Every structure is written in C-alpha cells, then in structure tokens.
Length: 221
Ligand code: C5P
Figure 1 (cartoon, rainbow, N blue to C red):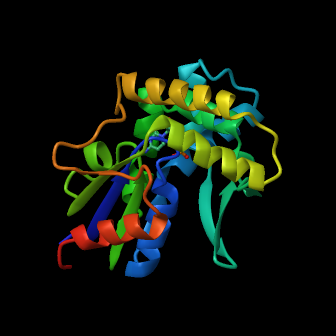
Figure 2: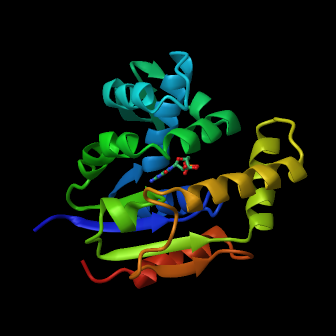
Figure 3: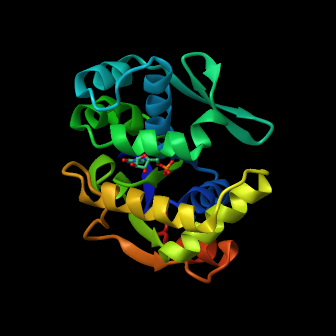
C-alpha cells in the first residue's frame, strides 16, 4: 500500500511550516514544503528575467528548473539550479512572485509529480495549500490550519524583526490579506479546506499545543 501521508494546508503565517517540521521530526517522517517549490520557480523565473504574467514562459521555467532539498546542520537548504537559494526564496518579494506563478495551471501540473515523489516510507508530512485537496486526496489525515490575519501579520512581523529587517505591521497585514485573497480566489487549486479536513485555529495557541493537537488526531499507523 502507499505510504502514510499527513497533509497540513492553510494560509501564509498560520504556522504550517513550523508545525509541519516539528510533527515530521516527532514522527520520523519525510517533509514536503511545497511552498518552497513555488517560491523556487518564482525565484528562477525572476532571475531569468521572465515576465511573470507570461504563462508559457513561466511554465517552461517550472519544467526546466532543478529544485533539490538538502539537509545541512539540521536545516533544510533549497538548491535551485545548483545554487543555494534558501534565503532568497524567503523574502516577501519572492512570496508574491510564488503566489503569482502558482495561479498558472500548467505550472501546478509541472510540479505535481515532483510533489507526489516525496511520498515514501515511513510517511510524509506535506505542507501547502492544496496538499489535501489535489496532491494527496487519499491522505490518512488532513489538517487545515488557520489563524486570524492580525495574528499572522504579528508573527511574520516578529520573524522579520528578529532577522533585522525593517517592516511595518500595517504593510505586512495588507500584504497577507492580498496574498490570501489571491490564493483563495484563483481558479485552479484555490486555498480551501478539503471536505474531510480537520480545522485547527491556532490564534492564541502556542506551537507545542498545536503540535500535540495534530499528533492526537493521527490515526494509528
Ligand atoms: O507557503 P508559502 O508561503 O511558502 O507559499 C508561497 C506561495 O506559493 C503561496 O502564497 C501560494 O500562492 C503558493 N503555493 C501554492 N500551493 C502550495 C504551496 C504554495 O499555490 N501547495
């Protein structure tokens, strides 16, 4: 039988990334950060000077870009066409580029099999927007993680401040709301919970508590 999959979908800043990583560590399962794939394609397209609204050119870029994950000192590095782009892909600019190219249907098709190839024994935690709806519809457990837009903006603000970047809370809130709207309203694979997803609202909850809630939901495997 195919290996176990736990999908964790939700909007940016919901804590998906952190929760997915911790749950994968506790279980000893593989991790798929699907957002990093879209970010990598957005990054590669920008580097190549491709107009992000040129669907055919971006699709060719998605098909040809080589993306690898490499574990280094307990951190996952993202290698794009042989170059370590881990830091570059985390910027808000790259997030916006990812969100723009992610709305192109053929880009999503180009990344489909790559995402499914992460499904390996003993199991996979898949973090994204459409993990439970499109990529792994047969997942044993689907979680949809949310938090209020205000809370997500505050978390992101703190992260960026800690990195020494100067941003305003207000601008971040506006960016988060714009990205949410675009991700939720696009025609292909919009951000929405799978019918059989369990909703967890992490507003006001600590990371460890959310991790415990997810683990408690997991069927025996
Ligand atoms: O999760 P992260 O913020 O890294 O994702 C960046 C962007 O990639 C999202 O705003 C979304 O538009 C897109 N994305 C997607 N489907 C996924 C993961 C990410 O469309 N499974």
